[in-house]
Amino acid sequence: MSTWSLSALLGGLHDDIQGRLERARKLYGHPGAKGDASETVWLELLKYLPARYQSDTAFIVDSEGNFSDQIDIVVYDRQYTPFILKQDGHPVIPAESVYAVFEAKQAIDAAQVSYARAKLASVRRLTRTSLPIPHAGGTYPAKPLHHILGGLLTFDSDWTPAMGDPLISALTKGDAGDKLDIGCVAAHGHFATTDAGTSYNLALEGRPATAFLFELIARLQNTATVPMIDIRAYARWLNEPHPI
Picture 1: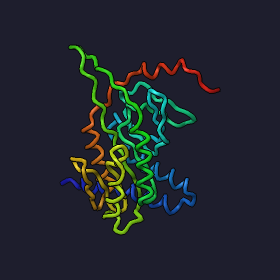
Picture 2: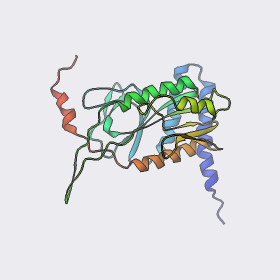
Picture 3: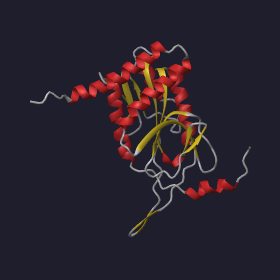
Picture 4: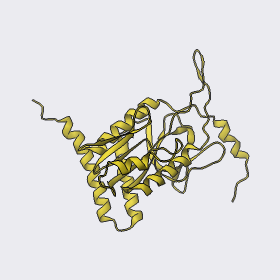
């Protein structure tokens, strides 16, 4: 009889993530070092996404030359994206290629939710192109622009209870342009919008990081493929003057 246990495997993944986040919070004295360490841990978790997805700390740009704020974690397409630029080591990703964006912090509270919403809004307001898709039998219509997922990832919560009314109150402020869809508080649980998108499910379970990863994968599956980018819309910037 096999001694393998799927429950133990999935639980071990969460335990590794939670343990590393906890150590980062305890061992690093400088806030910037703590933040960098937390981002690294969450990016390691997202390596479990299918190979068509990639995740990085990055900026996002659109074909009109507008840039997002720097985003802690960007989940983007790498299979069909024609270019990923880099500036001083920072990836710059075309807006059409973005599936999801997350902020990674030590603990969740109202200020961090508001901060994550502002970062998300800087991405969702960017222009995205979508071209008709040629195929052997003709041309498919341009793909409608997908919803860019947004969220917040932390180790702990400054609220008591961690997954209760204060969290719901913070999540339900704002509007569609900055509404968070999904997130994780590794020491306590994860949250996600309902299928209708009108409210939130708060899940308290023993393995929040793994549960969050699976929910994210499910939502990415529903998104399908990014639109066909209008590369000529970006190419026009080749003739624009630039500072030296």
